[in-house]
Length: 78
Image (cartoon, rainbow, N blue to C red; front, side, top):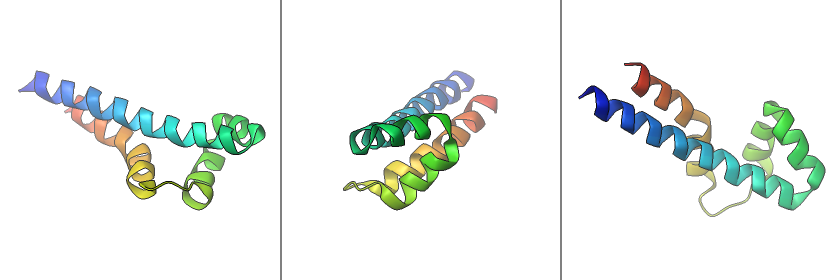
């Protein structure tokens, strides 16, 4: 059972990272400086994701990018 939790945690962590990258790519498409600042400063990434990011599945992507890492850590750590 432990190996299943670990594998699930890794999959959730990778999916969270992919969602974070989706937002970051959109930042770079919008403006180069926004992408650089978003890469360096997590608070600007959060601001952009909440207020400027425009996507058909905005909220699932943003919420999974934010909370997916914690869920993955919880699954791996248990």
